[in-house]
Amino acid sequence: MTEHVWSYKSTSGHLAGTDLTGYKVEAVDGSIGKVDKHSDEVGDAYLVVDTGVWIFGKEVLLPAGTVISIDPDQRTIYADRTKEQIKDSPEFHGDKHLGDAGYREQLGMYYGVGGPFA
Image 1: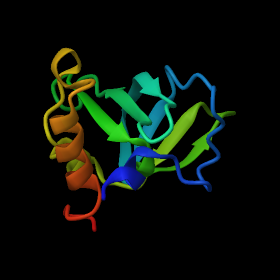
Image 2: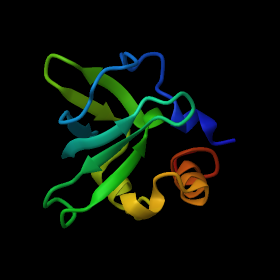
Image 3: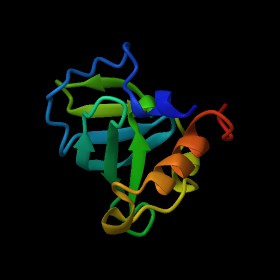
């Protein structure tokens, strides 16, 4: 039901195998940070974004389905959410949440079907 949020849109310009680490991430209303980690795994693609001081140095996990486009020349990824929407997403702790199916479902619901953006 929420699987589509875990795949890049065909229009995003994402090329499998591209190292996105260090790319800037832009929400629709401004910068949110840089990619710290990412996964290209089919059906489980995501970005872990280090927000720096923006939200007190936390990391957020963005499902690949939130990516509008990727500009490799500018090393910038554009997401289809506002900074506030990303800030209000379920809290992320890499050591606890990566690989956690329950967290993945919670985040999928927030960004996908049944969430505030459906």
